[in-house]
Amino acid sequence: MTQLATRGRRRATVPPAHHPTPSTSTGAGSRSDGQRGRRAAARPGPMRQLAEMAAAGGVGQKAGVALAATGLVLTVTVPTAAGQAPQTAPAMEIAQQQPEVTASTDAVVAFSRASVGSTVDPDGRLRHMLESESAGRITPTEAHHALGAPLDSIDPSSPFGSRVSPLTGVAEFHRGQDFVAQCGAAVKAAAGGTVTFAGWHPYGGGNRVVVDHGNGLETTYNHLASFSVSVGQKVDRGSLIALSGTSGASTGCHLHFEVMVNGEVVDPTGWL
Image (cartoon, rainbow, N blue to C red; front, side, top):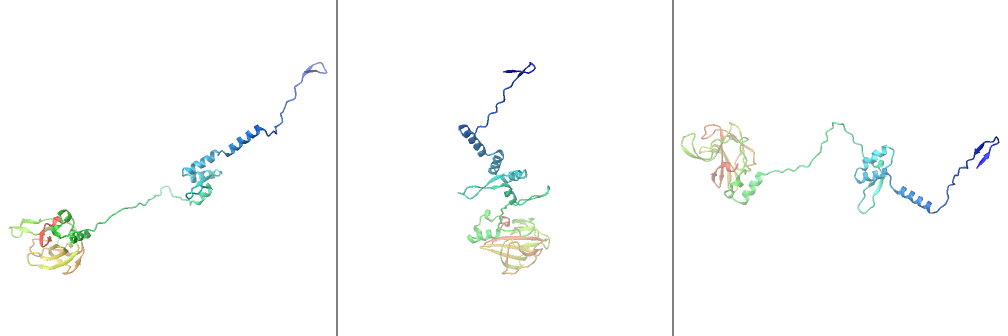
């Protein structure tokens, strides 16, 4: 529709804009919008989901500290006793309960570890064997290492058995095992026992000590420079009993060591 202007020109008229008034209806459309709003409110946001995943993965505390630093509040699940519902607590509160640990970048962190060790009681093993049967019934495998070394350093020289005597040059039966030893070297008991002889041996042994270990087993120590034990004295394995020398029928300082089983000499190397 046009109007005629006062000066003869036409001027178009624009119909007034239509602004619909907000509906105040409480019909079906409004209820649907409200339900969508409530569902959106109930759905956890991204940060809440992150918190729940962090708590389930065992890193809730670190995530809580990181988010708290940004001004956000994070809740994590705290495990409780079996049969109880899980409880939640602010991550910042959990972080504050943990002591702050600081260390320099070059600090060495040591971890203690459990160790398992064992000790061997050779005297106890020997006593057990001698209590159960005579020394003569002990097998070579059982006898091996049953006695300890009579010197700190074992260096065999003249062996047990048949040999040519260094004194006479005649073949003879050598009753023990000779070990190289400087004069005055410490001579030690090969096992625990009782001293049954400490004195001069009239048949070439010179200063001699005999130790009875029980049930037919004895050891003897010969050509000694001196001895520090007496008859009837109890000695332990490894205890000092004498000093090596060259007394008796000897051509130089050494130790003549014997092992006797039921009164008969045997090869000492089978027991060492």
